[in-house]
Length: 258
Ligand code: ADP
Ligand code: MG
View 1 (cartoon, rainbow, N blue to C red):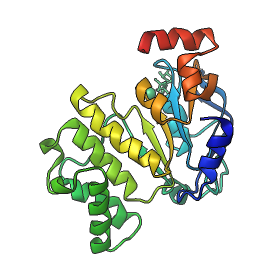
View 2: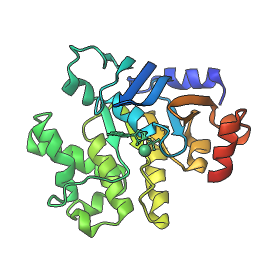
View 3: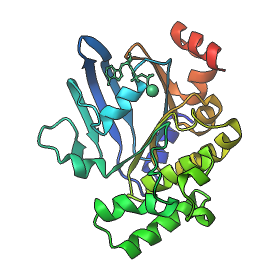
View 4: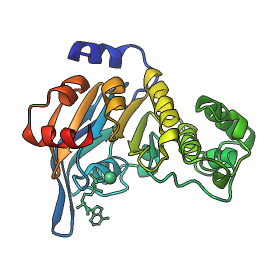
């Protein structure tokens, strides 16, 4: 996909409006500077895969986008919100952003349906019946409509991760952040999760995905961003970055993961 196609895809009347604009982002833990001036945009409707070695700052970057971590410098715009404005309504902003982690973090004492309704009723104050309806629709969407009554320990890892995705979708996010969503899964369940994510991308969801699944990145991502040591080393059209990287560090990383 070239730049024009990316642009038209983002402009083609998609329902999800929010994009992300990150500029000169810096984040330190004590004296350890983990993000050293990251600039990265995700246009509305675009899918960007973030790749890079362990410790390069990928999770920290994602966590800064919904203010699970407070950036030290730089700016982040998410949808209509300036995340780094001290007066930003964090709760309102976070509602636009769905996050899916490597560890699914489902509530063990709630069944799949209730895992998908609790934030809807508590945070969005939706009536239970409406929340149930939305949750069921999203469980259907991830292929788990028939398992709505199951508890997390009665589901495979891949099924639990799909519940986590349905839970995030039930909040009507305009942007989805995925942090290595398939890294903790048994190989045989990875495909189902990736296929749910592929469908979301097709529906026009704006997605920023940290992943080591290069096949997924190549097929689904509009762009791939390679990070190392807290900086963006290389970025571009997925096929170009994965098949013909220009930077030594990118080449070395891809040699290890492909
Ligand atoms: P990645 O997701 O690319 O593996 P992370 O963003 O998790 O990288 O971590 C980047 C660096 O920041 C690592 O050196 C890690 O040890 C450090 N780090 C991450 N979270 C914290 C934290 N809460 N406190 C201190 N250091 C952290
Ligand atoms: Mg990480």
